[in-house]
Image (cartoon, rainbow, N blue to C red; front, side, top):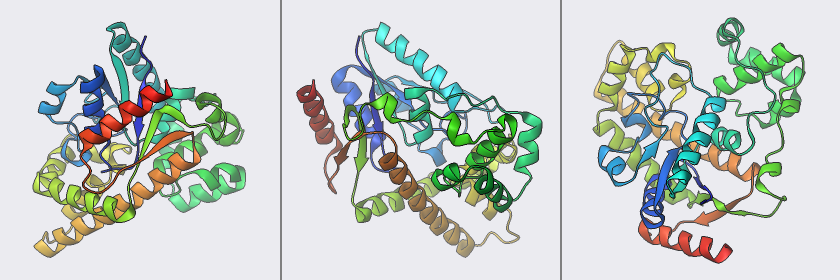
Length: 312
């Protein structure tokens, strides 16, 4: 039975292509660990693998739910583990690839003792200002307040929801990541996180965002608004879609307004990439793989294969 390989890292770092190259070299199949690629229709803005890429290598946990459906880390963990078992039964290598840290955590160690969502309470909390929720979180669970992404309303709402439902701090209901990945300070050779210089990553992000707008992000968002995008609090957190929705709500959709939106998406994406890197540095013990500007991703995959063979 072939152990899973985990490929993590910030957006636009090259994870998807490296995972494809690895899968072709090792006889693998890819499991997406991306909280937005699960939704049908969120294609351009999530850099979802193309039909050609999916023809090269089988992909799993992409396009598995509609915008009207809820999807969370617990569901991901269950379905990812099932996909891993099926891939291994075929004698192939499962490769988890994505940038959603919480999904990796849920896969490796489960989701702890936190209760399922309460629709009534969730709706009440989602109507509160983020500042109000953060103040409650600080008062009732300063540990989580310090660690959580305070710019992500969905995560903050969930933390406060769990505290209210259980009466216990959210931080006490989560097991330490290190229990799943080995002793602190000992990297896991099959859990790889990609690293690029700030300048290189910024250029890649800028090119990706520009390509998304050229590829029809505005038209895609207009279409999705007719099929429940605005009502899905999770999907509305997706960078790109949220900013385009705001642009579409402007009284005048001028070229200048669109240019401002493009620049705003670049800024928000760079900020998100920074938070992703911080998250993976604080949680778990991946093997960090530094990528050089212009380095062919096929060569990176070969380097990874050699490192894993040496470790084994």
